[in-house]
Length: 208
Image 1 (cartoon, helix red, strand yellow):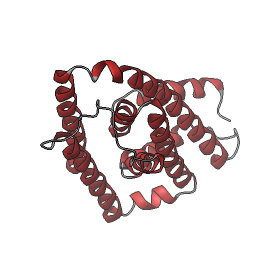
Image 2: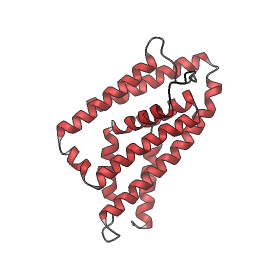
Image 3: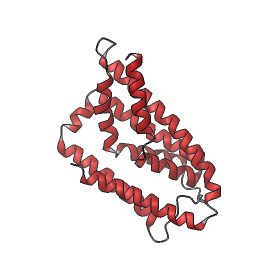
Image 4: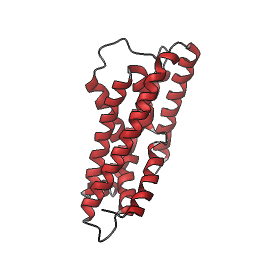
């Protein structure tokens, strides 16, 4: 295990990352407001599984191999950008449904919400790079095996992200009923969410 000072520095950094807006946070907020706190928690579970996959890949060297192949990384990056554009279009298209409107459909099951949370994380190459670039900086020689330290640090990151996500999902779910009564907020939110998702997509495409 890393020492106390190393863990403290690590916690400060990952907390800052956890509260920084990104595709996962946008999706979590949208699910929580549209379908309630429970749906937000389910989508958070999918996102956590995605982080677990990337953490395991980083620990066993698979992520480093993927990032060493430019074509593979570009394919992941472009797939993520396309997916974010799809979500953005769903929000801003004519007749689109605001994410602040509760759904009356029963067809959006928990399985789909979970899978969409997972896909949002898997198609975000920043998640892979986070574990590849961040975790090795906090692995302390002589404090246990590199693998065990990497897994511990990764699980701490996932646990913190889940904790922050639960707070976000609960807050967003509580605001849903009040915001849904304000038509002007519905339109503004739909355009804002769509714009943010499109911006994240453009950013992914523009990064080499």
